[in-house]
Length: 228
Image (cartoon, rainbow, N blue to C red; front, side, top):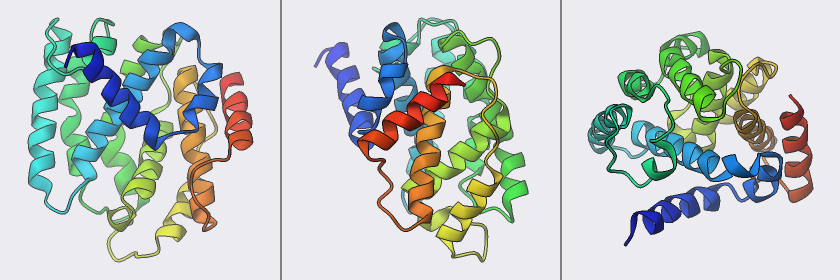
């Protein structure tokens, strides 16, 4: 399998999880579309390593591998196919690698929302910093916006471990995240669209509906987010 075919496999995997993106990406500049998919696929790979599975050890090993890989990207080296679409962009990959332990630590159920917001902030700042370079935005997205979106993704993908200690009301936790959701701030157009799609899914989940956004709803959500 060629690197290009392997990259396409990861993009297809991500798009299968986010079918709404086919509609939403019409508001992303053409030259950024593959890069955006690769970036969100990378974020998913890292989040899945941190939060997925009952045994944390495979995820720990994977995050360790990714720390080496991302540090290599900052020095011009690449092994993972996603790097084909991302690595050549001069972004602070080494800082993202350095902040992966904060993502790893977030696997442990927090005492409350403030605790997890604080714990994930270094990783969120690193994510926002990389995205700023990937998509040429004037300023990075606020860390709090990124953290809340990450927590929402965890609810949607791994609800059993998403709530604080002693709290088993996942839909209530989802409603709490929605209540804390910041207004869109600075950041990239692809990032704002993605966060809006995550928020839309979380709203549907909190209402007991299937999370995936209907086509027209996805289009309207993406349009509003693209406008900033």
